[in-house]
Length: 214
Image 1 (cartoon, rainbow, N blue to C red):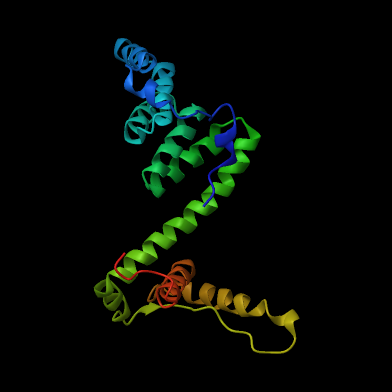
Image 2 (image 1 turned 60 degrees about the horizontal axis):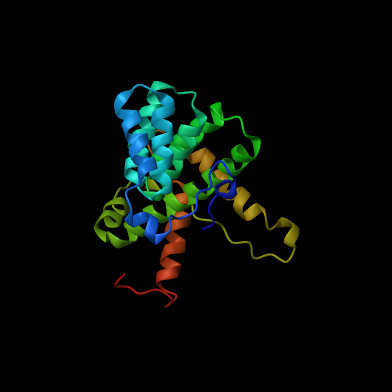
């Protein structure tokens, strides 16, 4: 899974500190922490400290400080952006999407906005895959869902005709069926994306290309 191209931009860049520099006291970070302590309500001080934490792989600290900056100034796009990056590093898909969506509302850099839109799609896919893995690993939950008489899942349909121009109907018909079933308050309709993710995970586990122990 590729990272945002924006990470290569000067705005988001940051080379890893040399080993010798890591062993010495981080004067820059100490100054930023002192600035935050002296003025805890300064968005600029919080933002600078949060970015510094992020570049030093202290993602939990970065997120905490950046979230504080966002509360003080919800229109601070840079804080929202780095908060999303930190949340993503922590595998918090919900937090990352929330921060990225905030940037889409207040951010001003078009290229970054475009990258974030693409990243949000990738995050949603990763979230579904993680949920599918969890569901497959916990068969008890799967059995409980299957025993719900009101639960309905519409699987992708298979086109077996010779006219390939009609092949898209296999998904279109499934979409129409899902839309009709969703109107009934008596049914619990399982999301197609989640069903597909689970099918993909099952296929992967049966392919012999994964270690069942891990």
